[in-house]
Length: 124
Image (cartoon, rainbow, N blue to C red; front, side):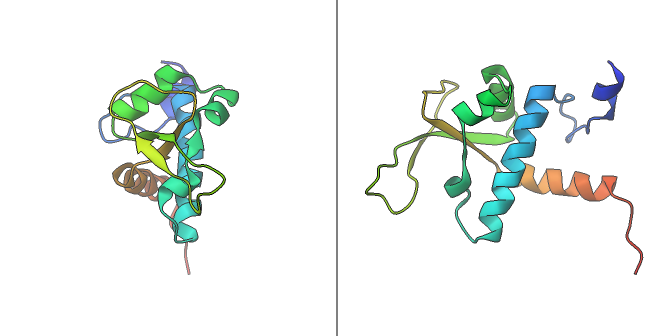
């Protein structure tokens, strides 16, 4: 294991994240908190497969995140007439072209806890 891998967090006994999985997780985390801050369903800020792929995240990284409970995926069905984004939730590891991903609530809480552990305590 190289130094950059050793520095990555171990999430609840899960293997160390690949660079692609870590990048995807960072973007899903940002989208999750955007939705929470705006009081939206997290699916309203779901990240697209295309966007994640443009950032160098491959489908193997995304499958790992889904298999380990970090992410959920669904195919976007939204049309111009819809008021909100709509999705058909994924039931397997196939990712059609309009697939989007969200961070699961359980893993968002774990990421938040790990960030708090990694941050030095702020004194008042």
